Length: 442
Image 1 (spheres, rainbow, N blue to C red):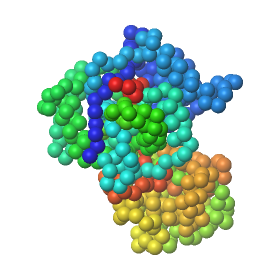
Image 2 (image 1 turned 90 degrees about the horizontal axis):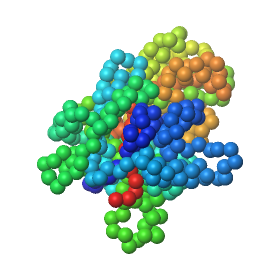
Image 3 (image 1 turned 135 degrees about the horizontal axis):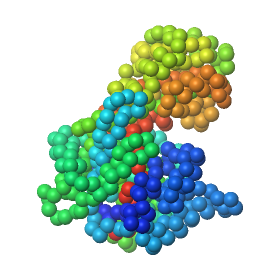
Image 4 (image 1 turned 180 degrees about the vertical axis):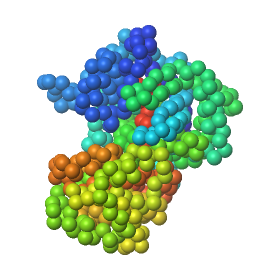
């Protein structure tokens, strides 16, 4: 079973840095270059300077990581950060509106330290997604330079008893330590809950609930694998240290049963088909799908836009748009059986897996070509996917629109020891970076 501990977090000192809304940022992997520059201009203490340091004119290789380390050390010295005096958990709430809808949701969890362990079937920590070498190398260089987790890995646990949800709700009815809204209108609130030795206290009860079964990684696979690499390298040089802090990383633990979590779909845009390829695509659809033609892109956008995030997916339903028009496609699962990858039933029934089979058969794009990039582009906005095709941006010829992957399906794939294709999930909203930082020290 997973091992979870309280920790002494570093937090921005409002008396030193001012309005905390100006110094937090989204996670590094969803920040565009334009947004990165805007965050740096917003406040000289914005945490993006630590979590996503920018290259500067005249930089040598890896200078930006060394600059992040110097900045981090300076902010710790000048009072911009302060370290909490006692180990604790950090209860976290996000109140938000599901994009494109009037549905309002609240999700609650807590930040704690998770002991690292290998990602293997039957282990206490289970992945659901493949990783790429480039992002892992970036995160490794930052972790090695700074010795801290600036943004958390997100893990999912299920507490059918409802005890954890009830306890989180009780804490959320008290005055928060931090209360701010981000640029997307998501409200973020944080409570510091000091640990104690009382087995009936909130820290021990939350840890017991989250550690009762394996944790599924929802977000942060690259950071987790990077932390494993860093741990193993540190062990080689400090093998005599007992229970070192680099054996852990910061995780946000979210409970999956009390409130529905929001997973946004990631749409696929196929490039380089040309007119013959698009014609062949349309000609082969009936071999795999029931096809309902749609003349107007507005209809497809309405049926597969962000509003579907408030509904359950996983039914083998897709939208297709080309410059010749569109269609709603419903998979005939028996037509896919022979070409499905090996693995569990949970994996083989996923919409993203069905679509990969369709891309291979109808467009000549196999999983290796998809992973290599170039032929398939990704976006969370159905309107953007359709627009790329209408304008033929970068050779965009066909947009495949998806529904979200249900959280239960994600957990089932992880529990079976399988991993999903890239860009299968996008959990929303993301935890804001900079509320609490985990220095790899006691």
